[in-house]
Image (cartoon, rainbow, N blue to C red; front, side):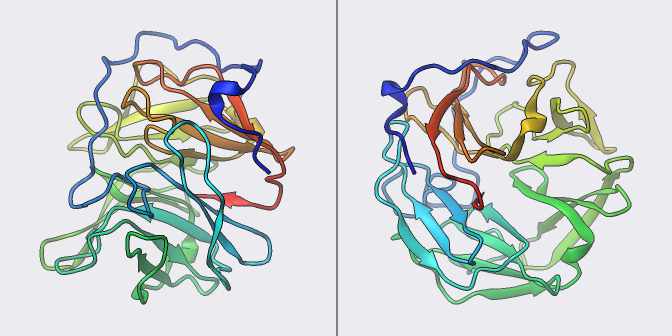
Length: 280
């Protein structure tokens, strides 16, 4: 499935378009509190990993090698026939919970479950979060917004957990039907999340006291060709800045390296044969 390290691959054509205006100054990635490992690190080696669910409900863990590629994949679970799998940092669902990174998974009845890792590529017993998540069309986690979701009527919501483990929510705006959220677990003045619109343009957004504000620049056009887009930390472990991974309709896996600001660089193909897989 994989074609090798990013450093040995040919730079592909079809890069995203230039932004309309300058993006913010770079900021180093930080570990979203509370956590003991970098976000999306499930094996304890401090490199971001990728989870991929196949069409048979098998969950595969692709450990990052810190150089823009993967180590050998391992089976992380069977029967993962969930409609959505959302990576979250350890301890997100309340005090006393596991500090290692985990995921929130929505089953076919709309019930959300929290799975936390042991730091070695395995999961602890899941905790039930609650029902009603089948009303959502797009769900991600962000440090400032908590769990963000768009419901079927196009309303954008933010859900978070307080210090006692109780869930709260806030309406952030309407008119979000047809958009797809992209997580942005960075902080430090960077956008709080991104969203792809119906025309395939990827836009960064900031959460404000009254809702959300779209940035004056875009992250490029042509993103409608991708079936899944995720932020995977510093995937090539070079500069400490955010990178993106995406799968397209042909089953190719693409890597978008950081450029020192919020705008992704030229894409690089890092895998083939990903048809039928949903990355998280």
